[in-house]
Image (tube, rainbow, N blue to C red; front, side, top):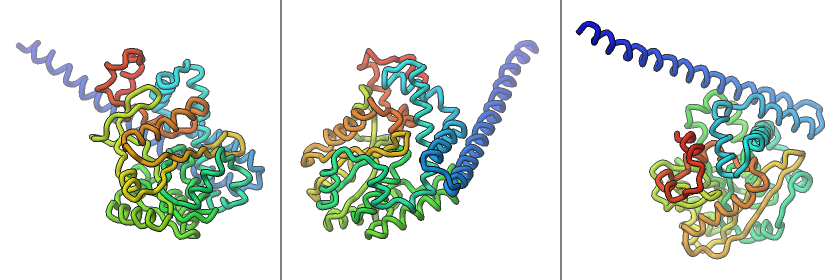
Length: 347
């Protein structure tokens, strides 16, 4: 009996030790994550004021994104996502990861450049694939659906700089605990965007202020102004029907604003803004046909993203939450999927 008790105690002790070690590991990972973010923001703030050529500043920012990345612990997940969704090998996936993190580093530097963005900046650094769509947005207003690209905050500044009145919708960063260690930089970012939007009569509205959001969106649509938001994220317990992205089923929760736009009978557009990893940026625009079926319209939104990801996979920030969008219940219906890789992505 004594031996049995001893054998029962030993596994429990080992489990407790393992649990403690996991806690220590998580603490160290979180500490490294915080230090990397703080140091990256600090260095970027210094680089922004140095008398260096624009391209040199960008190159430094790219290296900051790669070296001081907050996503290091997610590298296996990201590499697996690239391989599974894009059909690339490991070496190609690593190149995409470097490009993706370089884009992240540049977005940090750009926080300190927001005040410089105007019409001249737009003409000099941004290549627009269909300028006529931009003219339609300026003339008719409506709903602009964009995507998280690390650089999506520049888009409302650009639209505002050419005289478009818009409200931009986003999550409230000041209510997320994991942002508190960089509150100063989040405040600078928010202030710079808000000041630019107010020049054309616009403002920022957070998703946690739902009553004001709905009211403001209705007013904007009635006045011929623009509502701008990204809805390429996953929401737990989404009731929206599954859609497809890169051949895989995903779950999202994004139909509310489209329903408001449909009811108001305003035009809808897709807009993807990202860095070309040199000195400039690309803005891809598409005007939607009149809204008919919300599910089909949202599928079109992801089809537009997918079209560009085949050529510029670093353009989408969402790779780090892509695995949480996947609808695991539907995977048996997709026999060609690399199941071994995808199982590793389970949260």
